[in-house]
Length: 313
Ligand code: GLU
Image (cartoon, rainbow, N blue to C red; front, side):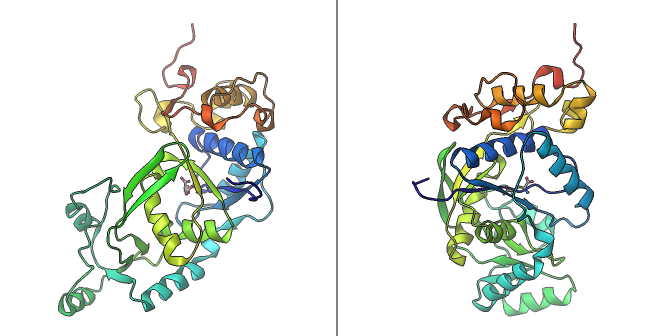
């Protein structure tokens, strides 16, 4: 970031359960990035999933973060309170003929996935409903199945200038903006909210790296600035798969039950991000030593004594 830019980072969990080690590690890195640059870290609850998002999970997540010394300003936003805004934006795009109704089922989409001609995103949409004839469209309308609304694109390519991964080419697709149950899509909400919160730097898991071209495209379309991206390599189990419950102790509660307290947890996290500070009380003790250049560029495997079926002796 250039000098004199007020840095704003954000942490954007979905309140659908306790935070796992991967989320916590990302939050620690985001907090460090923000505070090392005299910036701030904002909190946003991505609770688009109305069935599984719960206020009690929000409270729990805030407490878990506070346990590590991560706190936020009071200007927390919740995506569930912003559906009207997202829908208005889609309506504006509809008036410019930039979105179209899509009647495809999940199955049809899976079956017609484009043969990628570049680093396309998983499940990229082949554009089946993009140019339906008036007749096909009315046939589909009559089926009674409500449509999702997709953005009309030309499968543009974007180079994501990621701080960790380096320049990364991506190809976009006609992403869903409004799902067929009326719920706004993550790709839209994330872009709208990052702009609304004035976010200048985004630290998040690198499973979202190849989807970032979609966000850059939407930012340009909606006249928003593109923040700096820092995609953090994932936390994985011993099988190198994305961290999951079956791998062992993956939440602060699980770790506590194995006698691993906050200090020890933070010590392991510190090592995992290339820091060597001993006897950490909280995340602030890492501020002086933290350096993004030392963050390993490959996934981090949780320590063996956190894993399932580990026997100390
Ligand atoms: N809500 C997403 C998650 O919990 C994060 C999305 C983002 O950071 O852009 O994984």
